Length: 94
Image 1 (cartoon, one colour):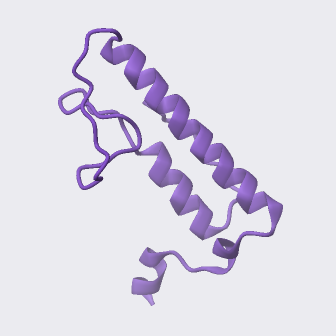
Image 2 (tube, one colour):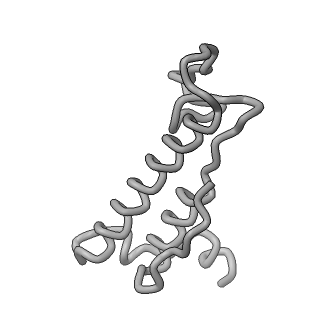
């Protein structure tokens, strides 16, 4: 499970996106291939014994970390349209 800090130099929108990836955890009770969610049409259950839950969780976290790294890279590039966007939770607070 990823628990590391999100870089503090991200804009609010990218900070929220990165936190979403960090908080995207592997579910041992309902294992699925990353990043499929409950409503994803391509959702697949892992029903074989070729890999352990620990190995699957490790891969899941590696993929989530890759996404966080992409978000950080995108924000720091200065070319991302999300940098000018206000996160949804800030819009409702106004």
